[in-house]
Image 1 (cartoon, rainbow, N blue to C red):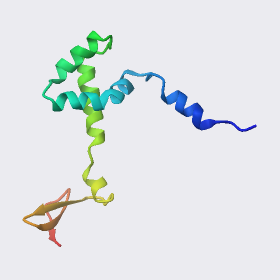
Image 2 (cartoon, rainbow, N blue to C red):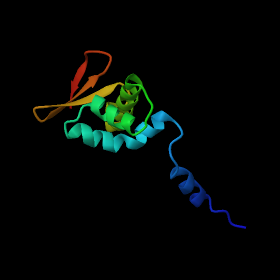
Image 3 (cartoon, rainbow, N blue to C red):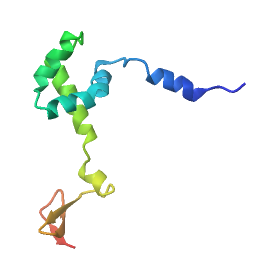
Image 4 (tube, one colour):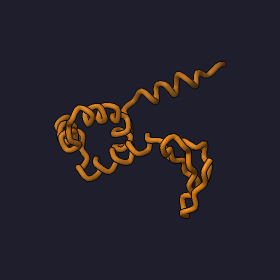
Length: 107
């Protein structure tokens, strides 16, 4: 008897999010599109409230901000997780800088 685990997971993923924060994360591409078109976050929140979304503006703002930050790459992810080093391009020359001290090295 073969079980279809993938179909089960697909079915689960297609249902509505169970938490408000998961709902905001699922709507994030649309939220970002509205922001990029010049809409304010408060106007987006008001539009979602009119559709029945029940979340305070403070919670919506925090959740949307945190979700948008997660998508952005961090210095360590760009560098391949090298601890305590940040790379900077300065006039075509790369510099490494220790993140907790003022020591700099030329490459």
